[in-house]
Length: 133
Image 1 (cartoon, one colour):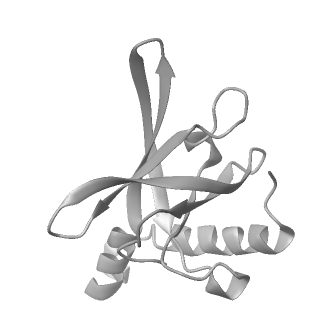
Image 2: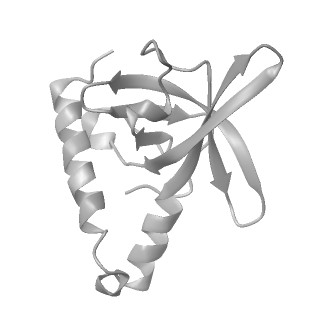
């Protein structure tokens, strides 16, 4: 499932913005650092081999895509290789780790769109994200 050209542009703009935050943290004020840190979450896929559950981990970022028709605090960008199996299909179980300062939970999310060539995917969380960039 390919990302639309408009959403692909949004993904690249977001990637550039996230890359700009890779500068030394002194360039960010405390509020910006906190927001960026809270927008980054761990992602985990699960696949099954016999009686074993195999997991893999990566990173996803909560993003505000409301101007592109994806309103709400539940959307994330990640690398497609975090959610695709060897056949190029999304894993049946993909979760993200959310921390609300009271508890940490793994919540399911679903793959909305992905592009293997660009190695990017759009995810939707079952639960609201703590922060978005």
